Image (cartoon, rainbow over all chains, first blue to last red; front, side, top):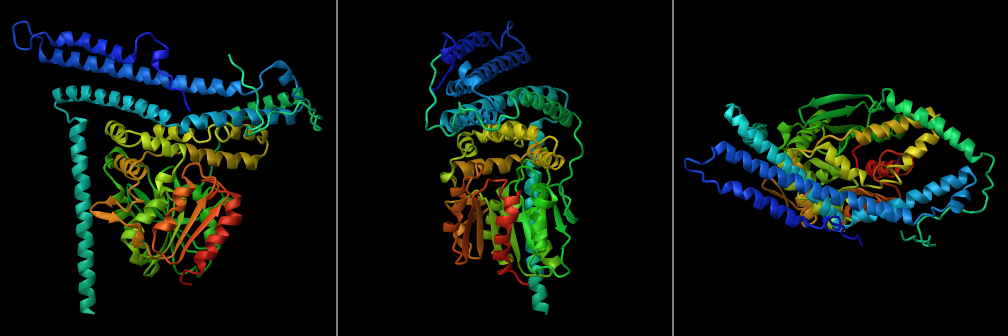
Length: 193
Length: 372
């Protein structure tokens, strides 16, 4: 139903190839010995790794965003193609009623095309990929900030997460205990009666 | 560029070439009026007045960091004895049920003589990211039910949920049925294999673990992006044309702004709940398969035997009506009723149509099954 418009149509180099070239380029830095008089300090290696990941993720975001915008534009253009655009057609709009009818037709056509797009599996996957790429980007930024937080002797987000998870588990246990106590007490009350 | 000619089978017809009889207003005049109205619209949005919502008199019975339990002041001295607990969804805010005086779901129930309570979910913070459906159903809803049972001195109450709140009410009923007299669901999400909506499509393809692991709670911005794909032109855009046309009608504008406020009032959803919602319910359809687990307990819909009224909107583009209607075939209740109405997801609860058609029929059904 929906043509899968990809980066391939907009560039001579397939996206996967671009990613591969990035990776090969950054791999050279890893070939520098880690344990020798000429080695880079560990912090530099980490920095290089983070930079590499950042470039990869931003490329992905760019790629999926481009695909997203292409799909939207394509659908929009295709929808407009179904609408009479020539001057004589537009001149036939003589009254407020005609304008409203035209508007309703325009919106109806756009609605139909966009709903088809949004209901297609391809578009769903694309939105998921785009959200996933942004998520990866956020996660990487968190990892980078965690590195600095540790060197400042501050708790990282991951440490806080472990605490939050434990707290929620404890709350559930307390809830279950309270409910068990309530049941026992009501049973005792009934026996006493 | 290739031109596609208009075809007769398009959903709406192209404008007529014949002159309309209503030619008294010229297009120039129309454009001038429109321009003036757009100026007024701009001013309206630049200087928004206070928008009053949720004005029905109530008391806050309990408040935690997750919810507020509201008790509405009964209209009659002796309301119907079986109280109703309304469980609202975790999407948008509960004041849609009490949006304005003449379209208030809550007020209508009060006028029918019911004693009404409402769980108003508060926006969760990042500290609540591990709060899951088990907590919502077996802790928060259960606490509210116990509180109402004590306060109203009854053994059982009517549980009444809307949308995601209806799904949670169904979950609750399977596990705590002895406290529930009647179950009334409005547009519940049940069998997602029958869901053909845009939301269902996004849900099925979403890598929810990856998103939630990076953001903690499902952020409002992402939720709004999903909702904006629902009828983007017929509703998303056309409503503003309608607003411009009625910009001088104070009542219309106020009602429009109330709905607008609600639409953009999207709280986050806790990460764990959102993961379960997408993975267990939309992707694996575990609720309809009787395999959904809350904590250590399995939700088996066939265990529901109390009276059930399931209300579905046939033009619902958010929750598939077929997916909602499936509930009636999955429970064991002998007193089991499905009501279908030709309206949409919001129209079902906050419209003149629902006041005239949905609420009277629901009230009649409920009245005959409540202790008076």
